[in-house]
Length: 117
Length: 114
Image 1 (tube, chains in turn purple, blue):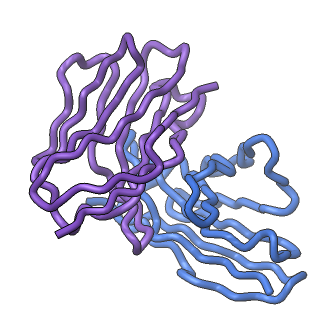
Image 2 (cartoon, one colour):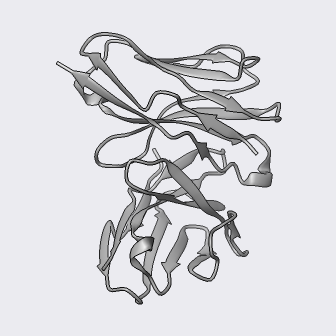
Image 3 (cartoon, rainbow over the protein chains, first blue to last red):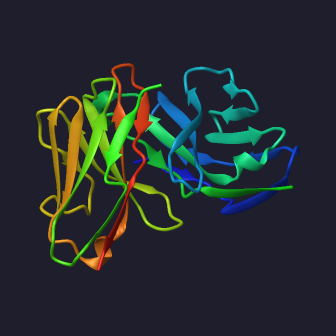
């Protein structure tokens, strides 16, 4: 079984600053996917970024980037130039790359991020 | 991007009644759909994986007779909460996987059982 751990229940950052959310995971799989999802107050799940484990290059999406350390099983999310609209719950998630699980996501407990003016 | 429509967005029912939640992929065929449950300020917990035309696979601890899942077509999966009780009150979210392994989420259903 895979576990995803987010050790920061809550974080706060000032507008325009940079913040890093941490995530570690445990798996015996060699190939898998990692994700960061954002859940704003509307509760709609929004994909922020996705990383394929076999790719060494860290994924980036505009102001969002990850630091993927496969050996350490770490997958942190960096948000640069934080904006008020980034205020949300952030979930780290894991999915095996084999079809047996149907590619179901296993989520961490989440980090509540507050961006202040 | 692909759209997953989930209805209703909110439902209030009396204890003992059954409630059906629909999840539709509007512009793609979803061979696999997933149902999650989320309690307030908690994470999403996978309840079951639903494949079109076959029985759903339930996670450990999820009562298959209480949470009936039907995936009769490539664009529709339904979750029926049978004989609902207050402890079933929760936020239910579906997601659908495309053929290219991308995943899209519905907007969720808040169920309140009185």
